[in-house]
Image (cartoon, rainbow, N blue to C red; front, top):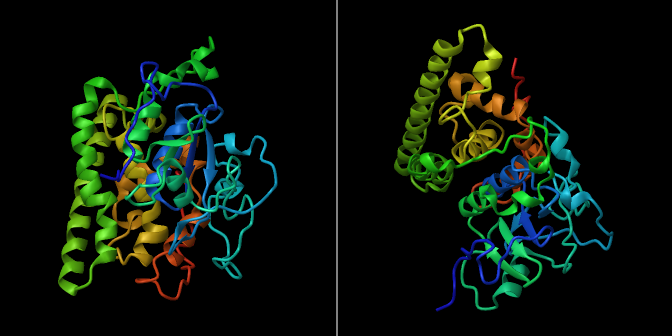
Length: 357
């Protein structure tokens, strides 16, 4: 039977996929929230110089994700947090006048595949396994040595990157500087709790916005919307409780201390924060308008989710510098022809992300 997914790991004991610096590569897209998870994990774990990154064009067309076609040699760009697409440094989207799906601006609309000069993600899947029968999705974790896909499940890739398998190649972990404390996105004692919460997030939030967009009847649309917003209400209550507990612990005036511990679980960043962030950062700029998730928005109706979002974005470079608002808006406006046939990119909100203070 033909395979429909790739779910291997990397370890010193694995017969094929062993840890090596610059042996593995990530192919992803800034518009895709599932790719975004992996980009955040790669950066927060200090693996930018260990695992390269290629960014697909923002359009997911009829043939899937494509790469920019260019013979220009890439140097250090794939080992940046943004794969060389420097518009991630912008905290607000730009004008989209004159931007269409045929544009192929290197380091603006995406990057090229520096290894095989492939035209699309689909070609990489076929290169890895000609009989592959699944979806040609991103992200993929690629092995340059065997020219095969190791894994294409974003949650599994995040956990893989979080493991200690690449620690020996991360300079910050080999430094005597006490500031370079290792980040653990899934502490062993929290994994059962994280796994349960991540499943809930996937069904009700991460996929919840897509269920609203995919509704074909009024009843289905309203039911899916109610479920989405009821779930957001639950997250708001959870974060409100976390914040209240931190106020009791540190005092209401010590905002810096509170925010440095303001996460979903155990006062530390976990992969649940990553999973929630990649949906919530897209909510007001994209889902509110393009997916008709417009019953309420984050910035005006969910004060604790909004504070948590801004804290993650402004106080953690791995979140901020892997967020590309141009690609996010273009992807959702122009890739979903069934629900957005005009392909018009919404002008608002005026600010894609508001200041923390």
